[in-house]
Amino acid sequence: MELWGGYSEAQHRLPEETLCCANPDVTIYIGKDKTRHRHGKLSLTSHRIIWESRGTAIQLPLSFVSHTETKSGGLFGTAKLKLHLANPDQPYMMLGFDSGRDTMLHQLNVVLKMQSWSEPVLGGAHAEQNIPAFGLAGLDRAAKVRAERQSVLTQDAFTDLDSLVQLAKPMVELANRLQGKLSQQGSTELTPDQLELAELLETAGIHNPVTKSSTSKSEFHVALARELGAAMKGPLNAAKGMLLLHDVYCIHSRMRGTQLVSPQDLLRAAELLEQLGTGMTVHKFGSGVLVLRSVSRDDESICTELHQFMTGRERGWVTVLDVAQELDLSVLLAEEYIRICEARGLLCKDQSVEASRFFVNQFCPITTCLTTTS
Image 1 (tube, rainbow, N blue to C red):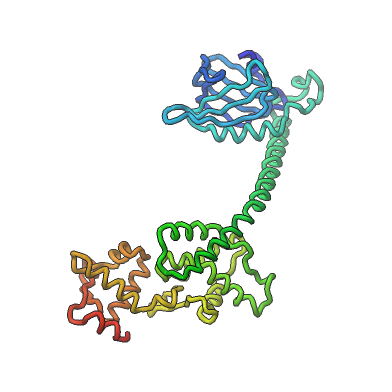
Image 2: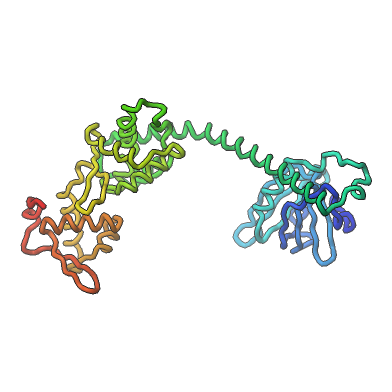
C-alpha cells in the first residue's frame, strides 16, 4: 500500500481537479489478497483515485497507473478491475465491485488518456490559494474538463467507427458469396443449419445498396428490384414463401443500413420482381393486405397445408390464433389463410360470442375444394 497517500492529501481536491464518477461499495486488493480497506466509497477524479470509509481516506495518483483490464469474479465472486502500476515492487492491484465496474472502467480509461495531471498549473505552488475551487471559476474549469473529455470520446468513437467499417467490408463480401451459394441450391425447404445461416446472412446487410445517385432515374427501380430479389431469398424461404410487405420493408431497410428507400419505391420495385424472373411476386388479398410471396406459394398450397394441419389434430376445430401459433404466422396472415380456405369451401365457420371457430367441411373433399375458384 506504499503507493497510496494518506488522509490529508486525499481529503482536499486540487484546484484543477474534477470528479468523474464514484462507486459506494469497493474493496481494494493487493495482488490477489484483500486488504483491510473493504466496502468503501471509491471516487475517480481527473488526477487520482480516492477511497474513503468511516473516517479513513487514501488516494492513488493516476500517474502511477499504466493501463487497466477486467477480471471476472466467477459464479459467486465480485467483478474486479485490475490496475497495472508503474512500480516493479507492486506491478498491479485490483478493485472489487459489487456493481458498476464497467462504468468505472470506461471513465478511468478516458481520464488516463487525457492525462490531466501532466498539464502545468498556472500560479505555481500557490495556485490553490489564487484560484478558488468553487464558484464561477470552478464551474468554468469543470466545463473545460467536460469539453476535453467529450472531445476525446468523440475522437475515439470516430476512430473505432472507421476501423469497424474497414473490417465489415470483407465480412459482408463473404456473406454475399455464402448467400449466392445458398440460393443456387434451388431448394424451398432448408435444413436447420441452412436456416441459421440464412438468418446470419440477413443481419450482414447489403454491401453496395442501390441509390438514386448511383443509377439513372429510369433504371433505379429495376436495379432496386434485383437487389430486393437477391436480398429476400433467404427471409422468404425461412417464412415458408410469404411475407407481409411491411415486414419486407423492415427487413430490407435493416439490410441497407442508413441508405433507406421510401415505401413507394419499394412497392414499385416489388411489382417488377415477377417480370425479372426472381420467382417472387406481390399479391394483394381481398382484404387489401399486400404480401410478397414465392410464385409456388399459391392458394392451393395454402389450402393443402392448412388441411393437413387440421386433419392431424385431435380437436376438430381451430381458431385464428391456433393457426398463427402452429404454422408460425402473424395473426394477419393466419386470417388470410383461413379466408382462402373458407372461400374454397374447405372450411366451415361457427361464429359465437366466445370466438370464431373453423371446422373442416366434411361434405367437400379437398380435391373438389382445390378445383373450386373463389
